Length: 261
Image (tube, rainbow, N blue to C red; front, side, top):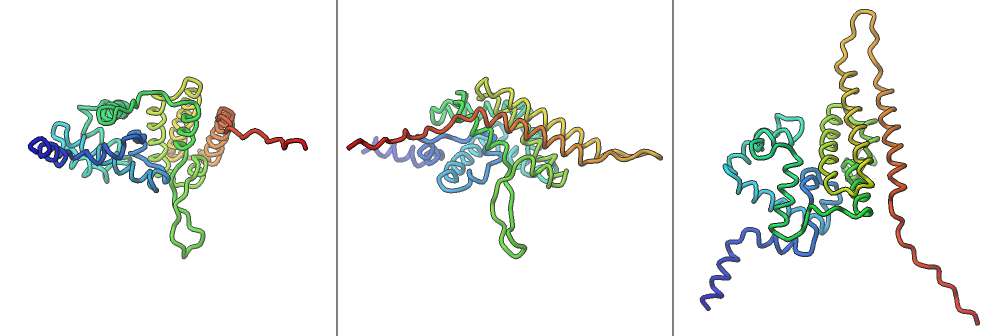
C-alpha cells in the first residue's frame, strides 16, 4: 500500500505525464514545426500532438536558468520585433547561439522524454514531403466578401506575388531559417534543393529590399519591382519541377488478370 501511494504521488506531481503518454508511439514535432505550424498541424490528432509538444517546450524553457523571467521578457519583446526568433535570441542568446542550436537542444529534449531520435535522417519520401510542407504558407481565403475566412495554404510564389513586402520579408526570413534547420535531417540527395531554395529567398529579399529603399537622384529612374518578382518566381518554379522528379512514386497495386474459363 505504501509503495502504491508513492507511485500515485509521483504521478500526481509529474507535470509531463500527459505529454509523455501522448507522444508515446507518435512522432514529436520539430522545433521549427512548433514555431511556425502548418494548418494541417492544428487539426485533428495533429493538434493534440502540437499541444503536447508546446506544453513540453514551455516546461523546458521554464526549467532553464531564470526561466520564468526569461519567458516573460521574450513575450514582452514580441511586438517590437519583425519575427519571434529575434526576440527569442535577445533573451536566450547566452544559452543558444542561433536557431540551429535551439533545434538541436529540442532534439535532445525529445530523446530524453520519449527516446525518439530527432537526429535520425528522414527517408527520401519523408524528406520530400517535409520539404514540400515547409515551402507552403498558411493563409486565410474568403470566397465572398461576406463569408468567414477559410484556412488555406499558398506557395512561396503566391506570397511573393501577392503579399505586402514587409510581411514577405518577415515570413520568408522565417522560411530561410527553417530551411537551415531542415538541412540537419535531409538525405544527401536533397541538400542541393534545400540550399537552392535558401539562396533564392535570400537573393530575392536582398534585391527587393534594395528596390524598396532606393532613393532616386535627379534624372534617375526607380528600379521596377516586377522583374525582381518574376525572376524569383521563375527560379522557384524551376526548383519545384526538379524536386517533383525526386518524389518517390506511390506503390500502385498490380493489375489483376481475370482467370481464364
